[in-house]
Amino acid sequence: MKISKIASLSFMVLGIVMITSCKKYQPDLKPNILLICIDDLRPELKSFGANYIISPNIDELANAGVSFQNHFANAPSCGPSRYTLLTGLYGPPSNDALFIRSKKITQGKETVKPSMPEWFKTQGYTTVSVGKVSHHPGGRGGDDWNDSTIIEMPNAWNKHLMPVAEWEHPRGAMHGLANGEIRVNASNMDVYQTVEGNDNLYPDGAITNEALKQLGNLSTNTENPFFLAIGIIKPHLPFGAPKSYYDSYDSITFPEIEHPQKPKGRTTWHNSSEFMKYNNWGKDANTDSQFAYELRRHYAACVSYADAQVGKILDELKRTGADKNTIVVLWGDHGWHLGEYGIWGKHSLFEESLHSPLIIFDPRMKNNGFKSNAIVETLDIFPTLCELTGIKIPDFTQGVSLENILEKPNTTGHNAVAYKANVSTIRTATHRLTLHKDGFAELYSYLSGDNEAINIADSNPELVKELTNALKAKLK
Image (cartoon, rainbow, N blue to C red):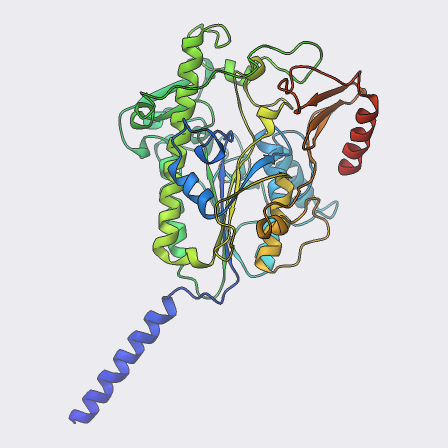
């Protein structure tokens, strides 16, 4: 009888051990992918040379991985930039680029290449998005961006989630300010705001909380690797963040704005219409230095707020143990002008609209903390993740894998292309050519200190011809 009880007890203990061990992280799975997308993020971070910005969590990721100091988005607006990230293809220049693709899929009139999450899904990955990954947070259309019959990325996600908390719906959260304030008429919404309270005062708090929940659930799956994409909204307009982040810049001095004057001649300059929609209290940031300072400080506060959300996500990844087998990519969807060339916003083809941070961390990498100066572009992320995970790179992708740069960070990169309606641009290590549809060319040199202040196309016809051919070859 005693022997029987002991035997039964032993079997129970053995069963508990087996069940427990089954829930432990299994390192023999293909690497997981954690993709963190941050909206309107300039490469104005400490790890990218801006010592006056408080970004400890992103900086820690950069110190563990490889930061691409010269990464350029393929479009200066959210929708088309995210199209290139999520499809590996150049696409329409408008914010509804992914919805145009979705319509083709649902109508079934032509074959549409699978998106990046769909590709990984076919390879056994569980794919989940939280927040603003595609253009609409949560990836749905309709008046309030919550119509489940209008999907921005069909076949892509096992789950595509957008917690809205007190902001009522994804559209409300996209431009939300503290305590559930929703943008109805942008002219009645302050362009910046700071309110006393915790991180849940703003929509990114709810996004992060849901992301932590999903990360915890996904890390317990011992059968399938995960592809988790998390989209943080700030520092997108309006610039709202808890007051503690604003206060952290009390004693910090920002450098002078480089090239603050509107450039002469024909360019892709614009009048900052998205920014000007908001309540600016009748002030002009290009002539009012104090107002310009406040805008830059509130933008910086939003960056630090977004950085704090990144820290929570990375801490949870480590807590689950999944960090040992998870590739982490942090990507800014494009840049943002803070007064350079008299622009407050994106949507131009100047450097400030296209230059954004890219950090890749692979727990197997040896070149921790390396800063690569190679020119790379957003299109490269899809093939890079395929190669790092041992998945076949689809032959339709238009970027190139960056694995060789991760292995040998001094490796040279390649030219980067970007576009908007009726104009496109190519960035080399030394120059930028911007070509308008009617043939007008802008050529800028980074070998001088003028950057994009002086168009040198007329005096360099051979270089214009060479770069025009290179640009057309990439976009064909």
